[in-house]
Length: 150
Ligand code: 4NP
Image (cartoon, rainbow, N blue to C red; front, side, top):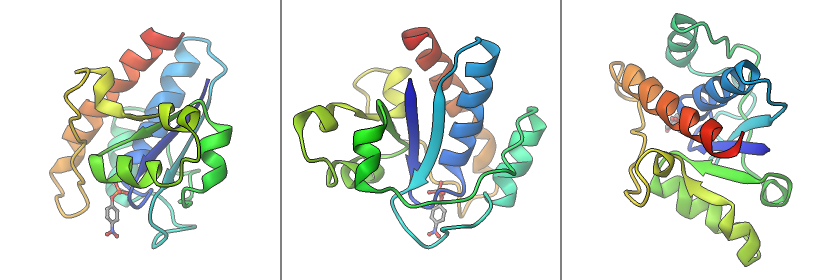
């Protein structure tokens, strides 16, 4: 499996999603390729937000090797699944899709927990308290993804 986690800035939610997914794949002995990207370009080259780094470390997940990058159209060719954190990310990824096959690869990540609800992982950028909720939501979703594809 090649999975790309996608949010807006690639500094808060998708870096945590990448770290959690990689940790679970490793625990399950799966050689999955996991990366993350942002639909926006403001933070390209930056480390994850310090609050995401801290939240990861609290649960034994070190995301300090990550650097933000922007989503590109070749990602839709190269990955099996592109997982959007919210509906805005979802719509922006779809804009880059050039075929029905590529469109099928794009999913809302929380639909792995509650299929069809199209629930968003809330953007925690302006909310210091939001990072624990983001972590818990992503942990649940990644667990389901392991069960579905391992
Ligand atoms: P993320 O959070 O999409 O989870 O990385 C954000 C990070 C930065 C901004 C917005 C959301 N920003 O507006 O700079």
